Length: 278
Ligand code: DGL
Image (tube, rainbow, N blue to C red; front, side, top):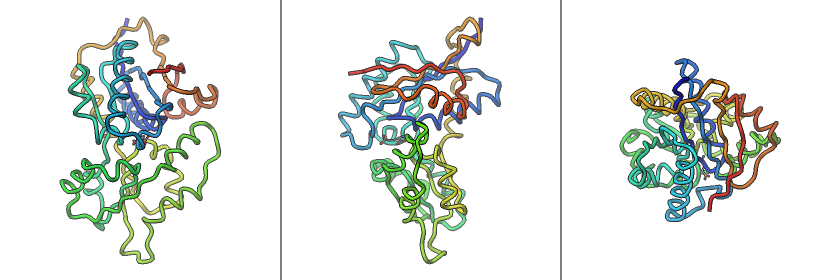
């Protein structure tokens, strides 16, 4: 019998899987096993369009239901749109530890050589008060160009569903980062939505000279540090019973295509479920 920690990861869709990818690669490097319980709330996507109260009620229902079904060691709000708004409220309501994902402004400000950085996130995240505070606390010296996009969320969803995605759409979204005057271009762009690292290859194709910064590695490190401090974890009789559980609230994707995409992200053995939470 082995003790294997489990983590509950929540997003409006497949975006949080970019965070799972970083976590799986860190756990592989540390030879640590863990089980992912993933909740993709496709019935309520995109979260950026929901009012604060509705979003808070929705997240409460998801966390309560999932805590009953599984007993995760921690919860990751793998969504910048939620974490920049509701992290304190959710922490106050549940006993389980929460890890939030917010735009990586601080590392980007350290990395830029030109003091011109971009923030690419959902329209809701780019104008949150939390984001303003991150910028004034950590990037006060920098010019920050904010671009909000829901189109890239749709593109990332399409990519994982095995559909064709459009480079033209990505080029149009990235246009505000390009200037005729090279001195005015950004050298570093923060991917402040967890869907966007899934499109890293396509983003790099459009802007090859930019450094892309996301929160994946920092979150993976935080999760491993937190799990390391906990002595518990669920007991599985063997590694064979360690199957990652992936929930959707509205519709299941094609199993074969989706499981292949998961495997490419390092989530090898998975079971998909449909769970309508009201
Ligand atoms: N992946 C979510 C984020 O990081 C997408 C938000 C949405 O559904 O609007 O913000």
